[in-house]
Length: 157
Image (cartoon, rainbow, N blue to C red):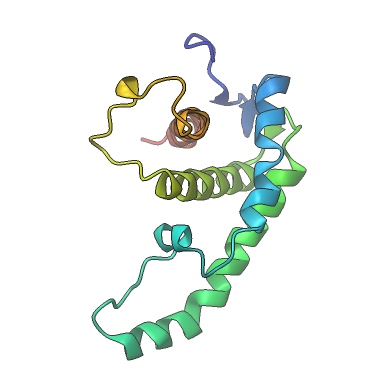
């Protein structure tokens, strides 16, 4: 990841340029299937669907019944778009937003599973720590998410 070359940029004439080297695309490729394989009851999903009414189980159940399937369908559409555009060099606004949703979902689930906290000092974790591959991927997803947010926000007054 070269700090001098942005991976995601707003393109002249509209849309976004996606400059991901082949090895980064290959690293992202299996993540869609992995995300699809996460059960809705998996504890790491809690970050994606936090309770709206934690202190009122009845209101929470009503809320889940009313919007739960819609939120799931939106995430599925975003994931479909992410997977079908993974090899694209240019994305439109809707596709870039789908990338934002999917990368964020992946990052949140991975961060929950790794018990990432704001005060975690990754530099204190040794290279032989079994969490290191996951933390490296988490760092990359965080970087890519920041690139996407910056590109989507570029040109907004």
